[in-house]
Image (cartoon, rainbow, N blue to C red; front, side, top):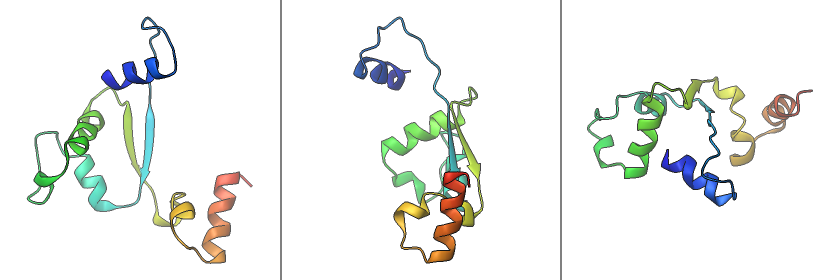
Length: 102
């Protein structure tokens, strides 16, 4: 709730304003999906060294209010790749069509 309170104050909304934020994250990395869906106190041998911010995020994913939902998608449909990788024409056009709704 502290995150919502900070967002509310940063945009100038009164403290009485109550909003529910819901976020859907599309992920194609199996390792990231596994770590995100672990219970907050469980860790893998390598994940125990991760930053506090990661553990905060994982607590919100595990929360049953479904404020943050992680959805597995196919690698070919990962829209973020369009902005972070140098794609050839065929995958670029495919992702552009999905993004633009053509």
